[in-house]
Image (cartoon, rainbow, N blue to C red; front, side, top):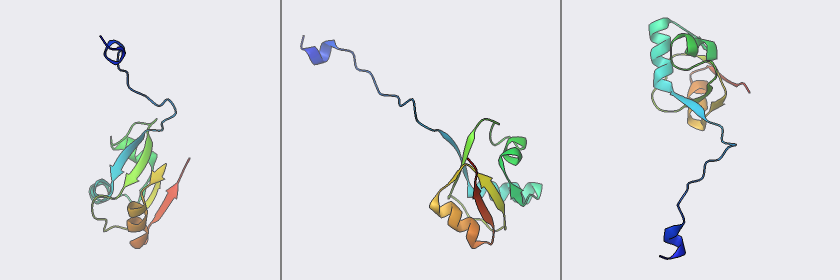
Amino acid sequence: MPLQRRVPKFGFKNINRVEYRGINLDVLQRLSETKGLTVIDNAALVANGLASKNDLIKIMGRGELTAKLEVTANGFTKTAKAAIEAKGGNATIVK
């Protein structure tokens, strides 16, 4: 058999990869409507079962946002940050 068929194929797993829990704007909007929250941070997301306490949170831009929110997370996409600031809210990055 040729060498390339004898040697097993293994994938690559980057040990330095940072994995985020993605939460979209429509989830934040639904959370602010049902719970009446205006400040959303890691503790609020953990309390409502959207993330665990050790997760790194990244806010994604899917959905519509109609409420003015103060959002604190580990990362934001450009569209999510623009949508939050367009409604008069504040997007703060925490490391």
